[in-house]
Image (cartoon, rainbow, N blue to C red; front, side):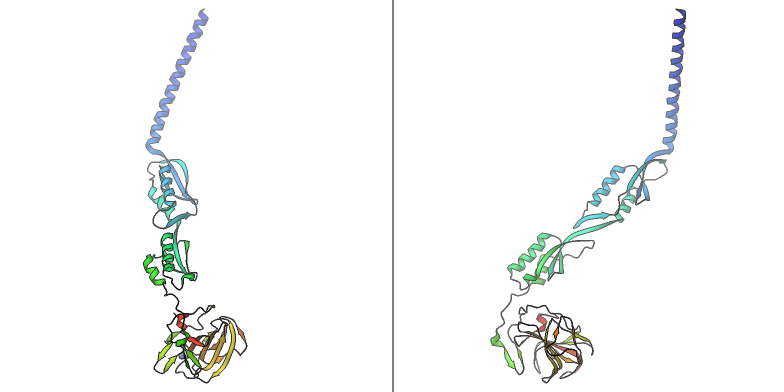
Length: 333
Ligand SMILES: [Zn+2]
């Protein structure tokens, strides 16, 4: 009996010392934790592309701000593309380390590329004007359709995704800029026969040639098509230096290459089919012969000042069924 009592007492003493020990341990932990929390605090170290960019204590808030930025805001911003997203790692750092959420955000922002979304109004597949929305693009095309603009078949629009934001035009000014009066049928009754060449005096309007023309030379327009003091000018004069290559405005067959006794000097005439002909006058050299097939852009002659000419220039004529047309209805507009 006495032994049992003694052992109960022993257990009691043992438990009491254990409690005391645990209690001391808790006190010590609290004190150590208190000292640590005075000097250190948990923070996220942020890296972008493996490069350290700063510390934050509020990872969720910072990442939310970055996500909102990436979704894109502002007019015509489609999305923002970044090479990589920031990475966070939790660590215990001395309190003196400052957090810099704003700087981290700016660094992520500067690593991103903004893609804008807007619409281009096209003429012959070439981007002419830019508008902000699809509605505006559709409105422009529809208005030009209603007005029966002559170039309507060449007009369209396309959606663009670009890092470059263009200047937007309002719909009314685009419609005004692109509008071309409806086609007027050239009345051949107004044509007058003048020697070898015929000039149409009808309302100037481009006939559908069925071919695309390119500029045979680039230079300065010194004389336009039409009436001038010395009589009708059946072509367009483009001044440039002697020896400049004259390119075929379109592919075709050479129907004349030689001296033109009506004043055009060394001259090339090319037939493009469907009654369309181009004439190149005052050349210094001729590179082609009659019957030869030429392709668009091919060198056919060199600029000169032969024949009835006062200085080096190319005299260009465009004829439809023998009637000289205003070349500026097609080129050098
Ligand atoms: Zn001329």
